Image: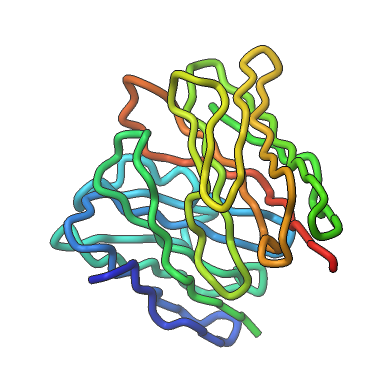
Amino acid sequence: GAGVSQSPSNKVTEKGKDVELRCDPISGHTALYWYRQSLGQGLEFLIYFQGNSAPDKSGLPSDRFSAERTGGSVSTLTIQRTQQEDSAVYLCASSLGVKTNEKLFFGSGTQLSVL
Amino acid sequence: AQSVTQLDSQVPVFEEAPVELRCNYSSSVSVYLFWYVQYPNQGLQLLLKYLSGSTLVKGINGFEAEFNKSQTSFHLRKPSVHISDTAEYFCAVRRGIGSNTGKLIFGQGTTLQVKP
Protein backbone atom coordinates (compact mmCIF):
# COMPACT_ATOMS: atom_id res chain seq x y z
CA GLY A 1 0.00 0.00 0.00
CA ALA A 2 0.91 3.65 -0.10
CA GLY A 3 1.63 3.89 3.60
CA VAL A 4 1.48 2.02 6.89
CA SER A 5 -2.12 1.28 7.73
CA GLN A 6 -3.38 0.64 11.25
CA SER A 7 -6.79 -0.47 12.37
CA PRO A 8 -8.90 0.36 14.16
CA SER A 9 -8.02 4.04 14.49
CA ASN A 10 -9.85 4.16 17.79
CA LYS A 11 -10.76 1.38 20.21
CA VAL A 12 -12.70 1.71 23.42
CA THR A 13 -12.84 -1.36 25.60
CA GLU A 14 -13.73 -2.39 29.11
CA LYS A 15 -11.14 -3.38 31.66
CA GLY A 16 -10.46 -7.10 31.47
CA LYS A 17 -11.35 -7.53 27.82
CA ASP A 18 -8.87 -8.63 25.14
CA VAL A 19 -8.07 -6.39 22.17
CA GLU A 20 -6.33 -6.91 18.85
CA LEU A 21 -4.62 -4.11 16.98
CA ARG A 22 -3.66 -4.56 13.36
CA CYS A 23 -0.81 -3.15 11.31
CA ASP A 24 -0.45 -3.41 7.56
CA PRO A 25 3.08 -2.29 6.58
CA ILE A 26 4.26 -0.82 3.31
CA SER A 27 4.51 -3.52 0.69
CA GLY A 28 8.03 -4.94 0.49
CA HIS A 29 9.09 -3.72 3.92
CA THR A 30 10.62 -6.61 5.83
CA ALA A 31 10.96 -4.85 9.20
CA LEU A 32 7.99 -3.92 11.36
CA TYR A 33 7.94 -2.14 14.71
CA TRP A 34 5.41 -1.53 17.45
CA TYR A 35 5.62 1.46 19.77
CA ARG A 36 3.36 2.85 22.46
CA GLN A 37 2.85 6.58 22.92
CA SER A 38 1.47 7.71 26.25
CA LEU A 39 0.87 11.27 27.35
CA GLY A 40 4.13 12.64 28.69
CA GLN A 41 5.96 9.35 28.14
CA GLY A 42 7.19 9.73 24.61
CA LEU A 43 7.46 6.70 22.38
CA GLU A 44 8.07 3.42 24.13
CA PHE A 45 9.50 0.55 22.07
CA LEU A 46 7.51 -2.67 22.33
CA ILE A 47 8.73 -5.17 19.74
CA TYR A 48 10.12 -5.42 16.24
CA PHE A 49 9.94 -8.06 13.52
CA GLN A 50 12.34 -9.00 10.80
CA GLY A 51 10.21 -11.07 8.49
CA ASN A 52 8.03 -13.22 10.72
CA SER A 53 10.46 -13.50 13.60
CA ALA A 54 10.85 -11.08 16.51
CA PRO A 55 14.54 -10.65 17.40
CA ASP A 56 13.71 -8.11 20.08
CA LYS A 57 10.57 -8.20 22.18
CA SER A 58 12.18 -6.64 25.21
CA GLY A 59 9.75 -3.75 25.34
CA LEU A 60 6.58 -5.74 25.86
CA PRO A 61 5.37 -4.54 29.29
CA SER A 62 3.97 -7.85 30.53
CA ASP A 63 2.92 -11.30 29.44
CA ARG A 64 -0.51 -9.87 28.67
CA PHE A 65 1.05 -8.36 25.54
CA SER A 66 1.91 -10.46 22.51
CA ALA A 67 2.44 -9.85 18.83
CA GLU A 68 2.72 -11.92 15.73
CA ARG A 69 3.42 -11.37 12.09
CA THR A 70 2.37 -13.69 9.32
CA GLY A 71 3.49 -13.92 5.72
CA GLY A 72 6.07 -11.25 6.36
CA SER A 73 3.33 -8.68 6.13
CA VAL A 74 0.44 -7.96 8.49
CA SER A 75 1.10 -7.87 12.21
CA THR A 76 -1.30 -8.12 15.13
CA LEU A 77 -0.63 -6.80 18.62
CA THR A 78 -2.82 -8.50 21.21
CA ILE A 79 -3.43 -7.23 24.70
CA GLN A 80 -5.17 -9.66 27.03
CA ARG A 81 -7.15 -8.68 30.10
CA THR A 82 -6.69 -4.99 29.40
CA GLN A 83 -5.98 -2.60 32.25
CA GLN A 84 -6.53 1.15 32.43
CA GLU A 85 -2.79 1.76 32.25
CA ASP A 86 -2.81 0.16 28.80
CA SER A 87 -4.62 3.24 27.47
CA ALA A 88 -2.32 4.87 24.92
CA VAL A 89 -1.74 5.33 21.22
CA TYR A 90 -0.18 2.24 19.69
CA LEU A 91 2.00 3.06 16.71
CA CYS A 92 3.26 0.74 14.04
CA ALA A 93 6.16 1.49 11.71
CA SER A 94 7.90 -0.35 8.91
CA SER A 95 11.18 -0.10 7.03
CA LEU A 96 12.79 -1.86 4.10
CA GLY A 97 15.08 -3.77 6.45
CA VAL A 98 16.73 -3.49 9.82
CA LYS A 99 19.89 -1.78 8.70
CA THR A 100 20.13 0.89 11.29
CA ASN A 101 20.46 3.75 8.85
CA GLU A 102 17.05 3.13 7.37
CA LYS A 103 14.07 5.38 7.71
CA LEU A 104 10.98 4.23 9.56
CA PHE A 105 7.56 4.97 8.12
CA PHE A 106 4.88 5.33 10.76
CA GLY A 107 1.16 4.69 10.69
CA SER A 108 -1.34 7.05 12.27
CA GLY A 109 -1.79 4.80 15.27
CA THR A 110 -4.59 3.16 17.22
CA GLN A 111 -5.93 5.15 20.14
CA LEU A 112 -6.80 2.60 22.82
CA SER A 113 -8.99 3.64 25.72
CA VAL A 114 -9.60 1.18 28.53
CA LEU A 115 -12.54 2.14 30.73
CA ALA B 1 22.04 -0.01 25.80
CA GLN B 2 21.20 3.34 24.31
CA SER B 3 19.08 6.09 25.81
CA VAL B 4 17.91 9.55 24.80
CA THR B 5 17.04 12.56 26.91
CA GLN B 6 15.18 15.57 25.59
CA LEU B 7 15.75 18.26 28.11
CA ASP B 8 12.68 20.38 27.41
CA SER B 9 9.15 19.04 27.35
CA GLN B 10 7.75 22.28 25.93
CA VAL B 11 9.38 25.15 24.06
CA PRO B 12 7.26 28.24 23.39
CA VAL B 13 8.66 30.67 20.84
CA PHE B 14 7.41 33.58 18.77
CA GLU B 15 7.11 33.34 15.02
CA GLU B 16 10.31 34.22 13.11
CA ALA B 17 12.45 33.72 16.21
CA PRO B 18 15.24 31.11 16.27
CA VAL B 19 14.77 27.88 18.18
CA GLU B 20 16.91 25.08 19.57
CA LEU B 21 15.48 21.78 20.80
CA ARG B 22 17.96 19.91 22.93
CA CYS B 23 18.79 16.22 22.79
CA ASN B 24 21.43 14.22 24.62
CA TYR B 25 22.10 10.54 24.19
CA SER B 26 23.95 7.81 26.02
CA SER B 27 25.64 4.85 24.35
CA SER B 28 28.75 2.72 24.74
CA VAL B 29 28.87 2.04 20.99
CA SER B 30 28.66 4.15 17.88
CA VAL B 31 25.18 5.38 17.07
CA TYR B 32 23.02 6.84 14.39
CA LEU B 33 20.85 9.78 15.41
CA PHE B 34 17.49 10.94 14.13
CA TRP B 35 14.90 13.65 14.62
CA TYR B 36 11.28 12.83 13.87
CA VAL B 37 8.37 15.29 13.84
CA GLN B 38 4.72 14.67 14.60
CA TYR B 39 2.37 17.39 13.36
CA PRO B 40 -1.08 17.59 14.97
CA ASN B 41 -3.25 14.66 13.94
CA GLN B 42 -0.54 13.21 11.71
CA GLY B 43 1.90 10.31 11.94
CA LEU B 44 5.58 10.70 12.70
CA GLN B 45 7.87 11.57 9.84
CA LEU B 46 11.63 11.78 9.54
CA LEU B 47 13.04 15.30 9.79
CA LEU B 48 16.74 14.49 9.48
CA LYS B 49 19.38 11.94 10.41
CA TYR B 50 23.07 11.71 11.22
CA LEU B 51 24.87 8.59 10.05
CA SER B 52 28.46 9.69 9.48
CA GLY B 53 30.53 12.41 7.87
CA SER B 54 29.74 16.07 8.40
CA THR B 55 28.46 16.70 11.89
CA LEU B 56 26.01 19.33 10.65
CA VAL B 57 23.04 17.76 8.95
CA LYS B 58 20.23 19.53 7.19
CA GLY B 59 16.67 18.29 7.05
CA ILE B 60 13.32 19.26 5.70
CA ASN B 61 11.57 22.57 6.36
CA GLY B 62 14.78 24.46 7.14
CA PHE B 63 15.77 22.44 10.20
CA GLU B 64 19.32 21.38 10.93
CA ALA B 65 21.06 19.49 13.71
CA GLU B 66 24.63 19.19 14.87
CA PHE B 67 26.18 15.99 16.16
CA ASN B 68 28.61 16.64 19.01
CA LYS B 69 30.32 13.43 20.06
CA SER B 70 32.21 14.90 23.01
CA GLN B 71 29.02 16.31 24.49
CA THR B 72 26.88 13.38 23.30
CA SER B 73 24.37 15.83 21.93
CA PHE B 74 22.30 16.21 18.78
CA HIS B 75 20.46 19.51 19.16
CA LEU B 76 17.91 20.58 16.55
CA ARG B 77 17.87 24.18 15.33
CA LYS B 78 15.98 26.47 13.02
CA PRO B 79 16.96 30.13 12.49
CA SER B 80 13.39 31.38 11.98
CA VAL B 81 10.29 29.39 12.87
CA HIS B 82 6.82 29.53 11.35
CA ILE B 83 3.43 28.86 12.86
CA SER B 84 3.35 25.67 10.80
CA ASP B 85 6.35 24.33 12.75
CA THR B 86 4.12 23.81 15.78
CA ALA B 87 4.45 20.09 16.44
CA GLU B 88 6.02 17.51 18.70
CA TYR B 89 9.65 16.68 17.97
CA PHE B 90 11.32 13.41 18.91
CA CYS B 91 15.02 12.69 19.05
CA ALA B 92 15.96 9.04 18.50
CA VAL B 93 19.05 6.82 18.53
CA ARG B 94 19.99 3.50 17.04
CA ARG B 95 23.12 1.39 17.22
CA GLY B 96 25.48 2.38 14.46
CA ILE B 97 27.50 0.73 11.73
CA GLY B 98 27.84 -2.98 11.80
CA SER B 99 24.68 -3.54 13.72
CA ASN B 100 21.53 -5.25 12.59
CA THR B 101 19.67 -4.35 15.74
CA GLY B 102 16.61 -2.58 14.43
CA LYS B 103 15.37 -1.02 17.65
CA LEU B 104 15.06 2.75 17.51
CA ILE B 105 15.01 4.41 20.94
CA PHE B 106 13.10 7.66 21.25
CA GLY B 107 13.28 10.51 23.71
CA GLN B 108 10.27 11.81 25.57
CA GLY B 109 9.49 14.44 22.96
CA THR B 110 9.50 18.25 22.91
CA THR B 111 6.41 20.21 22.03
CA LEU B 112 7.29 23.28 19.99
CA GLN B 113 4.62 25.97 20.30
CA VAL B 114 5.05 28.80 17.82
CA LYS B 115 3.09 31.91 18.73
CA PRO B 116 2.15 34.74 16.35
